Length: 141
Image (cartoon, rainbow, N blue to C red):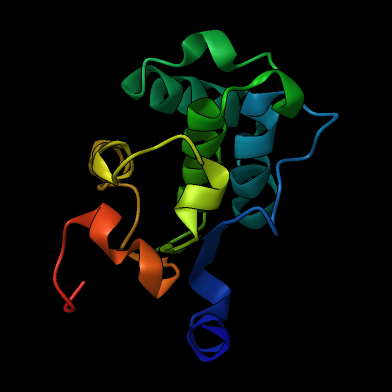
C-alpha cells in the first residue's frame, strides 16, 4: 500500500482511521477544507458544494455535527466525501470494516462509492485477506 500511496501522492484521497476527521470542526467544514485550501474555492461556494454532496447521501442533517456525534456509517460517508474533494482523486479506502465494524458485507460500502463515483477518478480498497468473503468477490477484487 505504501508504494501505491507514494505513486499517487498528489491525487490521493484517503479514507482511513489513520486520517480521522478533525474532531472540533463541523462535518461540512471537514469536507470543504480540501476545496478551500487546495483549489482556493471561496468558503460560500465550498459550503454550497458540500451541502449538495451531503444531499446525495441523504445526510444534510449531519452538516453541523462533529465527528463524535456521527454514526459509523455517517463517518464513513463523510470521510469518503472529504477524500473525493481532492482534484482528480484517487481514493484509497483502508480497511473499511474497521471504520464500520457492524457491517456484515460490503453492500453499504459499494453503494456509498457508487453514489459519489462521478467525484473521483479511481477508488481502491485495501483490506485484510480474511475479509475477502465479506466483499463477495473473487481474487481480482
